Each structure stands twice: as structure tokens, then as C-alpha cells.
Length: 220
Image (cartoon, rainbow, N blue to C red; front, side, top):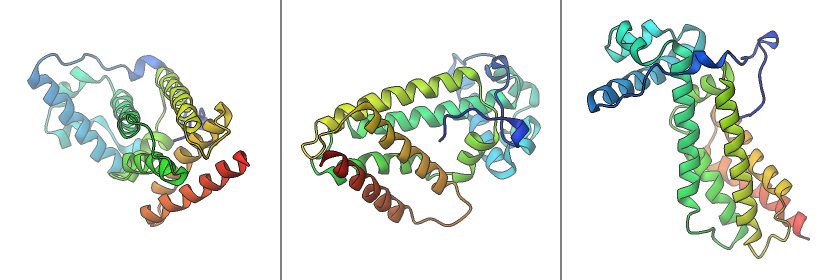
């Protein structure tokens, strides 16, 4: 995913006022939580099928089998639904990488890189069309952009620490880690969500080769 801001004047999403992205309430009862999740699951299907512009709240409510009034009890508009889906996707990716690096990284450089690359691919593989809608078509709340930037900062710092622990990598600087994180995120998002058919195992291998060569040259 890219963290850049977007502009409708260039045919791409823009940042909308932050209050449009706020849910109306957080469910406190099991039944309410289940209803909210059903709305989010339905929204994921609708946005993947129709895209951002045609992914209306009426279609989401119909797919979730709830009234439009029930949907509005939880979300004031479709942008708030999108914000919740974006947040869930970003947080799931962060958790996945944290889980797979909790015990450190394998010593071989390429295998260490593979942990990051595979986790990122796994977080994108389920519904590429939905991910394209979330991060290329839809507007983003300023608060969510700030959250993405903070997640990126933590990812870069964590990656730098992990790279410094690898004997084959002498340059574990923040810039080097930033290049690694950005390269993986950008290539995976771009190629997994493309209209073309991409072999994900081959994509994983190619990114590992690319970054392995870069890090080894930085260490020579």
C-alpha cells in the first residue's frame, strides 16, 4: 500500500473530512457486534464486486440482510464502513508480521526476508480486488493516514533492529530498513492487486532475490 495522499483532480482519491469516517457507535453486546461484523463482511463483498463509487450503503445493507436504518446505527455512510475495513486490513498485516518475527528471524538473509515477504503476501492474497478498492479508489481519513504512518515508523524501526541482528547484514540503518519495508509493501500491493495473473510463489522468490542482492551489496 502507498502512504501518499491522493487528489481527485488527478483522477485519484482525496482525503475527506475526518468526521465522515467515524462509526456512530461501538457495539457492546454480542448480538450488536455480530451485526456490525455482518455489515463489514457484506461491505467487503460489495466493494470488491462494484468498486467504491457503486458500492452504496443500500447495496451493503441488502447484502448484509439488515435494514438501511440498522446500518446507519453503526456507520453514518460508506466512508465510515471503508475506514473500518482499511483499519482491519492494516492491523491484520501488522499482527501477522509481529507473530512471525516474535522469536527473531532465521539467520540466512534470504530466509529472513522471506518471512516479511510471505506475511505481506498472505495479508493481500484473499481478495485483491477489495484491497485495490480500499487503497486506490477510496478516500482516506486523516486519522487513518496518521495511523498508517505510525505503523510504518514502527515497522521500519523493528526491521532495522532485526536486520542488525543478522550476521550477513552490517548496514541495518533506518534508511536501509525503510527501503526494505517500502519495497515489500509497494511491490506486493501493486502486483497482487493487478488485473494480470501473478504467481505468488514466484513473486515471493523475486522480491527475496531483489532485496537479498541489495542488502548484500550494502554490507560489502
